[in-house]
Length: 149
Length: 73
Image (tube, rainbow over all chains, first blue to last red; front, top):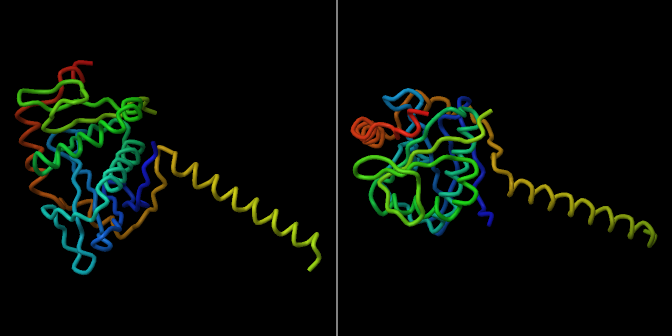
């Protein structure tokens, strides 16, 4: 199944991406950032809303724009673009809260067949990591690209 | 306009429509997205836009480390 996604813009280095979510609350600018962590080569995936007027970033708001699937599909697109530029990067992703992390898991599960062809995924448990399994509740996820250039 | 010309225009329009649908279909299916470079986003690259999230990620990665399976490979 192919989900529609929003068009993406990025910085030259492809560390910051922007797209516009269009839903029942109007147009909301979204920023996706790949943040270098304290571990070399490991990046944290973070995203939130940008106030188009003030430019202020808000990562706490739940926008409820009625397009969460399309937003997640677009964010997953940035993972492809980012790892295409940085094929050896590892990406850590976790939601602000359990509900958000569960939403990420549902997104991964929905496209697991395709995702597992392109990425290795580890699921974060209380005491460490394991290969991502469908149906398991994880606290976060770690991705790395297969078939590196 | 002659009927031959009308038919010619019609087929040309159909051809263009089909080609555009083909392109849209390919774009929808491609894994690596087409990304427009927007230089105005460069200013964000050196900033931490989501500091709480980064802090949390660093704490978790320090506590749990990286998957042994990946580190030892």
